[in-house]
Image (cartoon, rainbow, N blue to C red; front, side, top):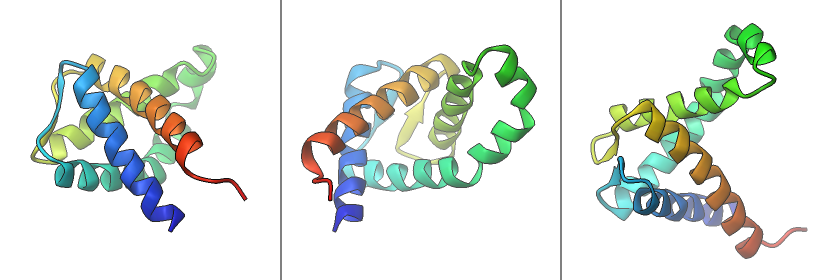
Length: 114
């Protein structure tokens, strides 16, 4: 049940990001649900590989390059899915950060901890 609630909250967070960031557009709740799954899969499968390959740059920037990696994944999903658009890398970075914060806040409010 927590998995479904988290999925729905992530989709709502994605709709909130589309409302807040001008260069990000989500056409419907269904697209937001699909995009939440694809973003989660990209973060689970692709992000660790990118972090390993960019480890020297991440160390030199004291970890701030992780924001760029998150933005690139967010931007990439926007190009991959029709109905979810991220127009620029800057919007991807801002959107990924806002998506993380909104999703975290919604999860903290709605989902009960054991």
